[in-house]
Amino acid sequence: MSERAPFFFLILSLIVIGVSTIYYRHVEMGVPLTTGEQVTIWQIEAEISFTGEQAAVNAQLSLPDDAGFELVEEFTASPAYGVHVLRDQKMPKVIWSKRLVDGPQTLYYRGSYKEVSKRAFEPPPTTEPPLDTWEEPYQSSAQTILNGAYDRSGDTALLLLEIQKDLSAENQNVALLLSKYSKTQVFVHLLDMAGVPSKRVGGLILDDGRRNQSLVPLVKVYLDKAWQLYNLETSDLDPELPVLIWQQDSPGLLDVEGGRNSDIKFSISRVNKSALQEAKASLSDSDLFNSGLYNLPIAEQNLFKGILLLPIGALVVVFLRIIIGIKCSGTFMPILIATSFIQTELLNGVLGFLVIVSTGLVIRSYLSHLNLLLVSRISAVVILVIGMIVLFTIIAFKLGLSDAMTITFFPMIILAWTIERMSILWEEEGGKEVLIQGGGSLIVAVVAYLMMDNTLIRHWAFNFLGVHALIMAAILLMGQYTGYRLLELRRFKPMTDD
Image (cartoon, rainbow, N blue to C red; front, side, top):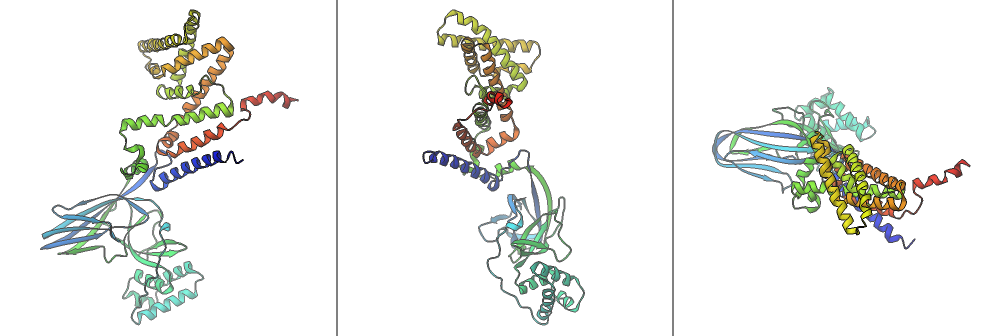
């Protein structure tokens, strides 16, 4: 067991590397696991308007910092203004500035945001906020409401429901509080008094095609180890519409110095884009591990898309030969034939392979009577294969069979060696063994083609390089197999009959 420990350690290392790499690419970098996956991008435009007073203007807009959304791109439109987007502070913001401004002004900020997670994964509050005590008689009325809700509830979730019900009821204490404060302010104050973490936020309800929208006052409550949103002013939030928390823990949404009558409106648009393209766009060019093959020119990327399919074919060959027990002519000849099938299509490739190999065997049988040396014989077979491919291509063109012209994609040297090996096998073992190994090679090539031409497998092979570590681990494990092949078990069939 100790002698095999390094081997199993290698296998385990390959599996860990492969799985962790796939996890990182999918979870951290957003590379989708399937092809054709779409991601929703919310394009939000903030239109800021104000009137200049013939003075210098500094307009500051707080930007969203929501853990449930990821900024994809942003853009500002502000002719003749200096623009600074600050994200190194606690609260991100954009600042417009101009030395002399007079008359109506309009500034624009546009950001594209992608929903990446639920708000339940936000970190819990770290410190208790200071309790703000209201002046009398408002504080006493709030305490009365809280006491009644507390007596009628058995846990924190029910306490929240009771407080909401009380704020919607008509009684003297509620009327007194709402005469000075909003429902949202009263709700947050009651939760602070009850020791329930909460804070007021300004949320933008994302609904496609909406214009002239404003932030909705909401309350974030930390309940059951997750942040939950409540809308006290109007009604419950629509679970089908996501909410972007735009304003929180900040003194104000918009602050304009040197202007008056400032206002802000939001317009919302939803766009569906390819998840793979969005993941590629978000990768950093300086990060070799993240960007990888995407930094290469398109021609080289297409080349590697084919090269990275070869391990898939190798896995098929190892499995069918070691586990199933299919005999082949050549170890990895089926892989190269399978790559040719990708170019020629399966039916055309199989027919072309059979025609060339069959014709080549007939001509090779004549060469065997000439007593040529091996190098000369192989060279002659290569020339014959090239001649046959040229001849069949010309015939296909004359007959208008454009699909058959793809036979030129076959690897000519490999076909020549296949013909040579089958010819020697015919002379030594007979025609039956040629049919067994030739048919086995064709079966393995077809299965390898079906795997290598699968859209999902091609996606994984190129976008998740960790898959190749898992393939290596599987090949090494099968390399240790010394038991019976499945096709060999038929020898024991008479024993079962008895």
